[in-house]
Image (tube, rainbow, N blue to C red; front, side, top):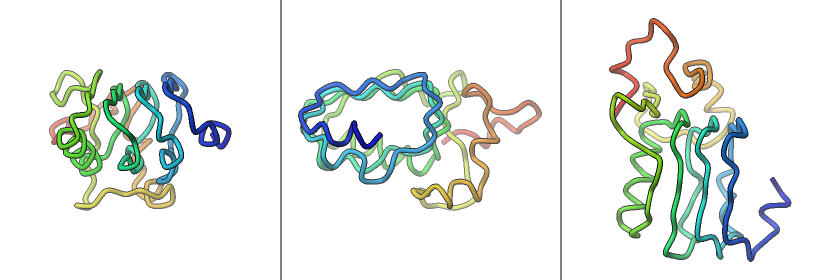
Length: 137
C-alpha cells in the first residue's frame, strides 16, 4: 500500500473486495486530494485518521467488521464534516460492527489481534451461534 500513499494527487481510492485487514493509522495523511474512498467488502476494523482529507468526500465502507467504538468516532467525524457515507447500515440486517469489551478504538494491529476480531466474522456476518445482539451499537 506504500505506492498508494505516495500518489498525493489520487482522487479516487477503490480497494473493495480485497480482504484488506488493516490500514495504517497514517494511511490518509498524504492523500489530501481524495474525493472518494471505496473500502467495502474487506476485513477492516477501523478507518484511519481522516482529518487531513479535503471535502466533499464520499466513503463506501459496508461489510467490514468494524469495532463499534471506532465506527462511532468515524461517523461523528463524517457528520461533523458533511462527508457522505455510503453502503453502510447500522441495523441488524447488515451487521458490520464488532463489540469489544474495551471502550476505546483499537488502532494497532497487535491490539486488534489480541481480541480476535477477525475470527468473529465470516463474510461480514457473525459466526454461527454468536449472540448477535452484542455485535451492534
